[in-house]
Image (cartoon, rainbow, N blue to C red; front, side):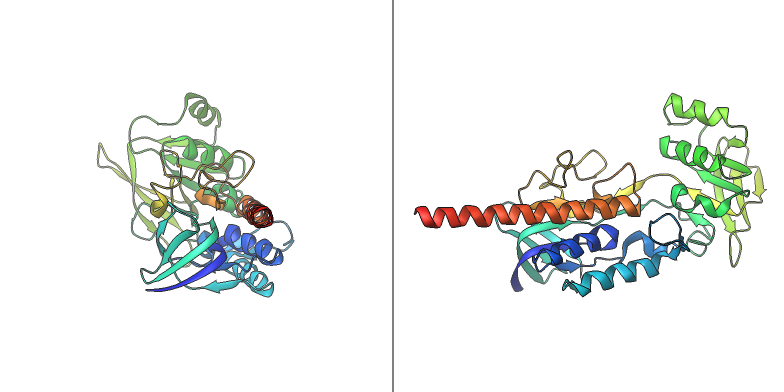
Length: 320
């Protein structure tokens, strides 16, 4: 197995990873960034991005991530294809294995592996992703102003997404698989109070129809077997996200769903020299702008950590 030593290793791309790379490179940390299984993160499957500051005419997700990558490279970030497959944070410096064949020893590690939306796995979902199918109402709801849409889910996220879309859309169908919701009482009350939200109980999605964009959704009542065709142009899946943090289990503190826990007001984890940013540690906002912000925090925290270690080593050498 080949090996090398680096000052700052960034695991994962996307707004958080690339922003961390920009700040780390400008600070002279010579960061090495591995892009992971989906270079650019979830934004690469998003068509239009209209809510990121600095783009008055909007920009596509893939184009934005290309710009982020170019800016990180401009300051000297070593950006590589590859995926972290194993870590060892039991000793310092930290060890990370890339693609099961290359060992990196790092003085600081920034985790920006993101989270992946959970999908239904139904016909038409992949084909129409970004063309009517979405997993983020805040990101894409604006494009469906005055239109009819569907939200799938029964928890707080689904209730929030439906409530948000109800302010923009003509009609919102909320598909709930059972005869009750898991959402908190206050969120359920909010849904009930909005006249343009119609809850379809005991209802599951059969398939999505459309070629260039979503045209309709075929749903089925799982108790009666009755099928219904909903003429909608938007389909929002709100059944949760899964953080891409499995390789860090046993080392980093996480919540019950796998989101990395950081010290309040920082990107610091329970392991010194390991920092987390973006959706890997954010189960609330999950926006490109907030991910970029925490990427900045992670780079600044890593820079401070490395500087303090360097000063400590100098003091120890001079007093030895």
